[in-house]
Image 1 (cartoon, one colour):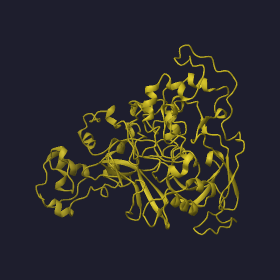
Image 2 (cartoon, one colour; image 1 turned 90 degrees about the horizontal axis):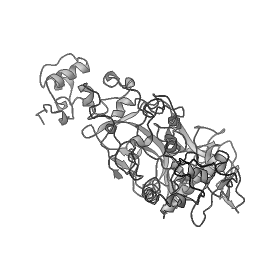
Image 3 (cartoon, helix red, strand yellow; image 1 turned 135 degrees about the vertical axis):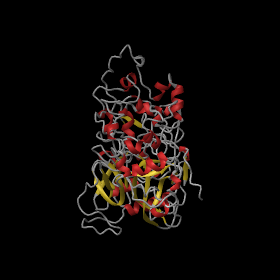
Image 4 (cartoon, one colour; image 1 turned 45 degrees about the vertical axis):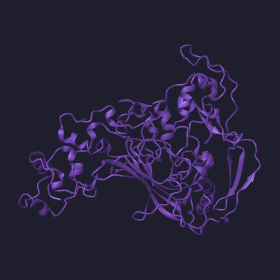
Length: 552
């Protein structure tokens, strides 16, 4: 496993575009079993028939550049002097240092991501063009230069693009026996290329008008990719969605509330030369440093309330201030099972796709774990072993001794593993989308990795940090939500247990007594007598300067 060093807050998702999972179940009929025998008649595993390229369908490919004139430039706009747009070189002519900085950022590069396998759309590499849409280049994966920087994707919210021309027409027979035809992009001079989609932009839009009216990124800019990671709005992260772009609901997120703090993403994720700080538990790559609440708030944020301020050393702010996630109307995906395909007409850019079965969650109580800022993340090519029957693809490291308590979304999936090497397979998700033949998609992934032998389907999981969705302070968890109940969290399961029986622990200092309330008990032993946690529990809090248990 790859050990990843600290950073807090959130990030980009690996593969977004090809299957927009707006509904868990879209198809009628019975899904295929391991040896398909559904009531719907279908044929066995045909090879795809690749038809010679035809003209790009107008509904799928980029439309021609409009002949209508560009809007009259605004004299106050420093970019109004642009009269021709010749691709990224137009921007680079004046902004070469900025282009060079974005060239070395993770928003443009694929290092640490292209080959890696996750619990959502699995692996970008075999999916090929299907995972390219969010990166800010012109369509390349390797050998990018500053002239491959598509600045407009982050600096003009009107801009829309798609890989093209989509003249690779592929026909397949899916698991039901039906013939499906898909239009996919072709490479030009060895690489895919993004082209403008004028049909998705306001009438009269030209590349010149887009270049003339660039702006700093807005929330909508960032959310267009980050909120839609994993296949659709809200699918992956669970704590952000497109609803955050213009929401006036402080319960959704008090920081992004348009009528409240109205912060942009870069107010917290402060860029330095296009390096964007902040990441979660489940990503290999980090850049630009950390994002923490005390960038704006103090390390003792609760004023004179010493008891609450003491919590800040071991309990992350998010734990008390984000009591639920998946609060947006779209919810979030909690699990995915490729072996139960369902037809989604929105997949493959509106051409339809056989997606895996998706279990959605709404208004979810987080899982809580102690996290020390480090993660174990499955690294491509490594062997992996199961823990309690589940293969952990991204695991928060830490314990009650060295970590802070954080809210976490645990995503699960059913994925194939090589039985001869114990390596998670780079699943051929594109074949799955086209045909729904999950066994073939697994076998094709095995072959893609250059492996032989068999595979099996296993349960996988990934820990994901919940860090957006802070509510107004009046809605913060109260003491009894955690200390007087197990409905929000189970403190005993997190390690807050007596180190022996109640009688044995109490008799260290005095006779056994009737159990008082938690607050009274804690105030008496810690507040009044200055006893450290180690007197009663299996952990210590040395930072408080209390009297430690002298016994081993």
